[in-house]
Length: 572
Ligand code: NOJ
Ligand code: NOJ
Image (cartoon, rainbow, N blue to C red; front, side):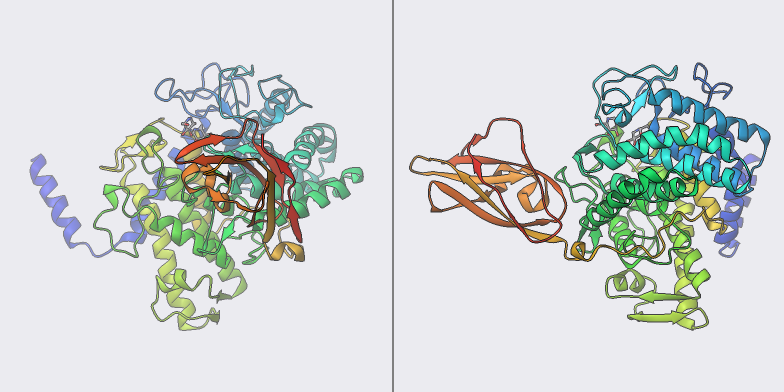
């Protein structure tokens, strides 16, 4: 009987026409509520899987071994609560219990800010600490710290709440409770955005696009909030730094048509870091602005395509999938963590960026194809060409229809590899799609909720990205830097340089750049480097393959926003 039923079902699935869109609707209608329940289960004090977590504390996952994620990360918690605060403030879930939970989160974060930890105290760098124990004590083991995205993401979540409260007559809670928390985080960002940070994957210490993008957003909306509540003393300082951060943000774009995720790390730089940055700094009122890499901006679309394509050959579940179709994607193609598999939140982020783009094109009534975004649009129509197309044109209709279905296909991949029961782990196997690594990852659930809402045309509030002008000196984002170092050498010995950016060969001694000895004992080289960037470097000596490094610490320069720059170093 069973086999009869299953062969009947098999027949059915052969004979039903392509019902993909409605398959997705039905997946979303079951998975959406499961994601919400799964997310809430991971929040203390009463979440069913968060036993021992204080009120408002989000555990990353209930998994206590391999990996042990029973901690609270500021990044994960803030992204999760941003999703909840959006639901509350947009009227999707206005239950009093959610309001209580949000207030718990506010209190929990206020407490964590004050906990002395290995990154410092509240006033000496402690706001860069990535994770804490669920009882709100410091986590003191070695870790990739600091991570400077957390304070920015927390600010964004709290500012979204604050703006809602201001519009709904509760300004006293904003000024007395939220602003003191926000001011600590915003001061921290304003003072330290230029410092080295571990990336959101806790692996690479350099500068990181996601971190810079969310810091920029937080400073902008923080400035607006400060103005609205009369905290004018911070306005000019934050505005100056926001302009500097926006300038620096431009330097991650590379001429190969994508955003290099980290200035260090020695990888391709193709990373969902950049897609996450685009969706978490989406401003539905900012059109397709390139300055902030809005989801429909030419740069963000070109970047999306190059990111997606980087996974075609690294996961066997992607083999046999047509060149232009959606595939499973993960953090970055070189990833090996927990097997280096696709991540649910990564694949969903691609869909979300595309839904955000479709929302804006629809709202504006046209789409624009530039030389930068042309390769992206040609995926959907080989005859696509540079130009502006009104929503009444067949080109617009064909392209947006195809892009909607491409976006849906990423959700479809997640649907295919969601186990029965609907639990979303961190990863799904690159060889057969079974769930792997941390179970019930809170961030996976949040990413499902926000992607589904975006598909539905529900968008977050605007944050002030509209009309931002990149300072003109940032537009040419390269500056010529001359490195001069005094070094006496023996015959056969030469001086080279390596450092933390592509142009300095990402610390690779094999590829180090040879300096000229024309003015010996001064050795020199001029290198084009990204503007307004903190860059680390060292000189090395090579003699017949023997490599000698300068002593620690690494040297550090901040490249200027324009002009030229020269160093006057002496071999260490
Ligand atoms: C733990 C981090 O959470 C993860 O992102 C990283 O890949 C591993 N450590 C390895 O560094
Ligand atoms: C590892 C991820 O790389 C990191 O981004 C995250 O914060 C932690 N796991 C906890 O989910």
